[in-house]
Length: 113
Length: 116
Image: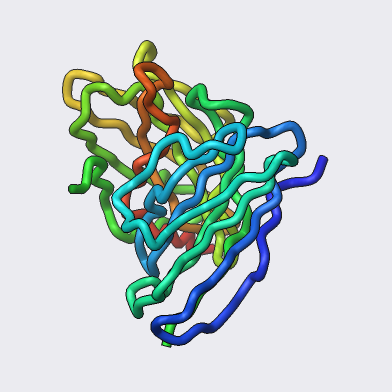
């Protein structure tokens, strides 16, 4: 059974640029959530995708957007990067929307200079 | 608006001792309370979870105590080991009804160090 995999693991961007982060969900999982974890903080919910549709969004501006593909993999896109976007971005997959265990990847560490 | 408050921020425990981490929540609609463990460079991993219909759940050395009236829950790690040294996060979520997602609201984390 393959777990949640994310790429890239680390990346550095400059303010104003755009970034795309990728996530492959765990086998059999059709729901993907994205979280932002600032240094020393708990993860914060960005949004969730279920069957290729956005299903819930946290308190993040529209420049944070996402996609889910037919194979349930997902992308997180962030436009017009700001310094405060520097964080660990975590992808989590689950088997459906009913509250239960989220399986997290190891994250993508984004640094914005 | 922080809906889940976690304490302490850091904790040092001797090997074999009991580690206790506390969380308090505000939203009475929450009905799922997990604890996640995160090692450096890794994503969080589910440790143990409880629903509000029980007051305690035990899995091995890990126990969740839940007080619905006080809106508090805690993690107890018995016989703490150096390998337990990690950051622990409490979290809460609502069930999937009324269009809600199963998003987790996390606490700010507790850095646990178990000294040999």
